[in-house]
Length: 111
Length: 115
Image 1: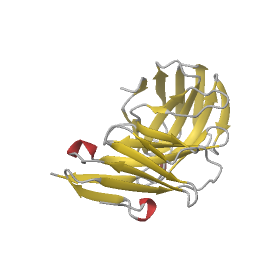
Image 2 (image 1 turned 60 degrees about the vertical axis):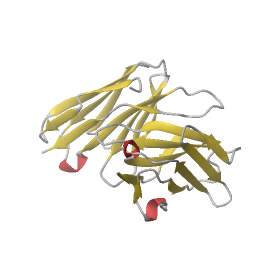
Image 3 (image 1 turned 120 degrees about the vertical axis):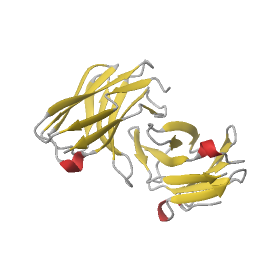
């Protein structure tokens, strides 16, 4: 399943499928990007980050892709599990160390 | 656990009350932040403290008053709040170094309801 971030704030996928969550960022000078996961009743939790001199970074079951040409960031989750159900935020680090957060996409995993 | 704790986790207050939110970080970081999270909206940065000095106040109304007595503790003092101030208030910390990146670690938040 795939979302387009601000235009589709919810994403529903079947357990075991891959998920793609998208984010459009605003500042071409942003040099660092983070994906956070926020479960109900909890604060945002760091998932993975990427610097602007990279276009791809992989973690455990997650991959972040960065396309600076179109200012687009995506989070791919492989073999999505019910425990992945949460709201996912992207954040861009602008000059001065300030993080600007996106609206968030709610991921719902159906068993 | 992220190493950032917040108390209380839930708070209900009237518009004439005075209350305080507390945040403590156990990560040895030098910067702390207050954010407001309202339903269906992005996180809104309220205040930033570097080495106990306030470096940013994001046009926050004066009914919110931050205090940072040391680099491990951060308070948000609340008085004469409005119902629209009801939200989740998140504290975060990071280690800010020249030329490095600003990964922030968040606490669980305080769910505030103003009646």
